[in-house]
Image 1 (cartoon, rainbow over the protein chains, first blue to last red):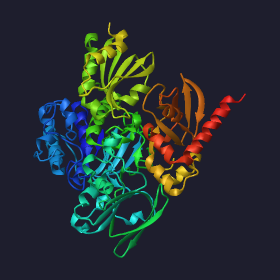
Image 2: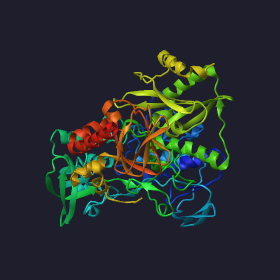
Image 3: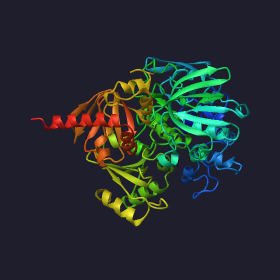
Image 4: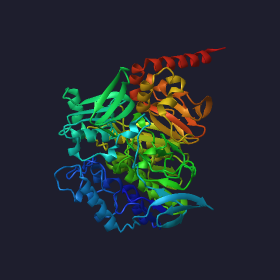
Length: 483
Length: 138
């Protein structure tokens, strides 16, 4: 097996594979672990929190819900490593703190990476894959690409290619007293605008659809609360503006850019002459020759089409880890995506995927625990209340328990999209979900005689689902299996 | 399937969005997200909450009621709007018949999208009227 990439997705995959006793190589084009965090976010501090003080003890499984940045370890020295290096001045780590946490994880867990080894080509020969790299060929049965969503991407609007991408943002001082047009109203656009507020004369954020805000969308893909100062400035008429415009044309001027844009609603065309511009239009997966060898892609070629276990739908035994796992959207209930694009979500995907690969391709199965009928309801409600996998990956990962002649078996944490569409013995999956009103509650998916039904349990003010009411409702649903 | 394309241009080729101007199509392209489904994967699940409004960009799908196929859907067809408009879980499954690429709008965003895009709402109503006429034909 080969894992390509030494960002958090590759490292988590390698860690879990090693724990399962599966030999593999990790190769990375980078000189050190860390992937995208080597360069981004451009303005230094992450948008994912690691809370020094939390309702759970640091290093416990439950604490992972409050620490969105550390990788998952099985023993104390491998757990909560980012929290360990934070200086306490902020609960969002700086890039340097994130890097120290990752370095410690790699060193302590003994993860071996062949750095400065760039993946250059892929081929399939007689049932094996051949990876061409800058350091020679690797042959393997299974590949995991943990290559990040790291290549700057711009939509094909005329002239937009002239505008520097977010990845090429200049030092802050070079925007002093300038009028800057930022194309894009997602997190990277708001991150730049927030950083430019104290120096730029005017900032214009423009893209066709209105800004989506995390607290309104109930999802971390919306612009995060801590970047919203430019939005408030716009609302109060403070000089900086957010515009819902489609970019018709960008032209280079001697001293800046001329941007012609049309209002999506107003249909009014405006011309903006600005000193500088930045395209905060996102990133794409560096797929290299994978589409040529048959890996199906979508979203304008930016993402591979994946099964619920993050395997290419068109080329079996090619898997993806890290932020690319967002391509497997899961149930996407109410349009609220899982956190697969960020460490807090994809670290769990990597663990589930590594266990799946070990079982499917190498015959290594993790032991499944038998659950006593008398403990089943308590077990499931405890998971809904505290399991970090369920909280970090809502409506996406679920605790699955099956019922067959052998008894009640805990099948572990599995993709919910796989469970609800799979057949097999009677079984129950519990996940945590958010609905359109923002209400967070447990959801129970019960498979009976091959058919899966959804049952939603109620929410609770402090998210404690181990109440008598929840217990009674779950007992009613599972009654045939409790005797 | 094409790897890269101008999404707005592709949308303009679907009858639902045929009356929109280029800036409007760009806004639609930014509002919808894209999802991929494999053969036999369910997109709408009978009795499940939190569904979305789907427009088929590529591929075919089947509508199945209690496992029995009752309709086929192809590029440009849409589904999921009934359960959003009535605020009820879908009464049938929609299943991919092969590789299927859809544009998706979350349920909660669909109402405001239709209100701000009356031309799309009109096309949607036309399609619903045709479905009703075909259902009532004897």
